[in-house]
Image (tube, rainbow, N blue to C red; front, side, top):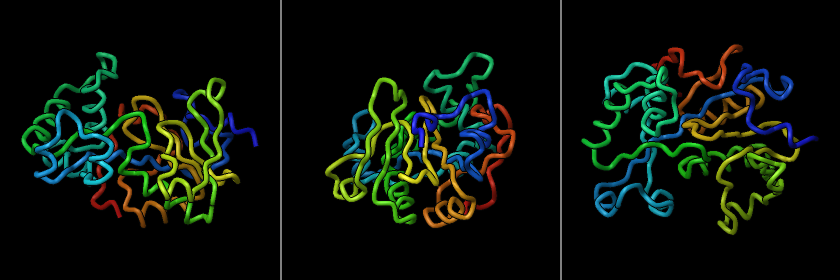
Length: 233
């Protein structure tokens, strides 16, 4: 299996047809906002540290931020977040959504933006559980630039025992390549590719907020309205 082909897909092509159409479906897992108890939040300077998130962090859903900010779509939330980190060209910026999200976070005082361009700490347990569900004892890590950094074969037991940490950004897949997680620079979402039944089970059991991509959906899905469903179950 040529691992180098499993880097993040092209921005120009529909994401579902990536990797030669190898995978039945793809689900965009939205990186959750980070919530901390008020007592812990009072000790935070700037953004919570990895240890604070790992020990005390809780997921705060996009749907709740949308309700708090009076926004109607996942696309607005994503544009607002990308605008906040100055990752969009002027014609795509959404200053209204950015300001609305900022006001929600400032008012709450114990909620922070999701991390971008990485496998978020609050999703690590979900990712490892997916490998366990397929009885995979090895996690293959394909770095963002495999021509510069080596592919790593990580033992799931080591990741579970914290002897090794989950890689920051790139692609994660089992040795048989039946599914994969991949995340791109500046993205506030991670893509999960695989068989529909498996992906659906992971999404349901882990209560992962996001959406299945349509046949024509590209990387810049936020340029079109992506509605917030009535339920994430």
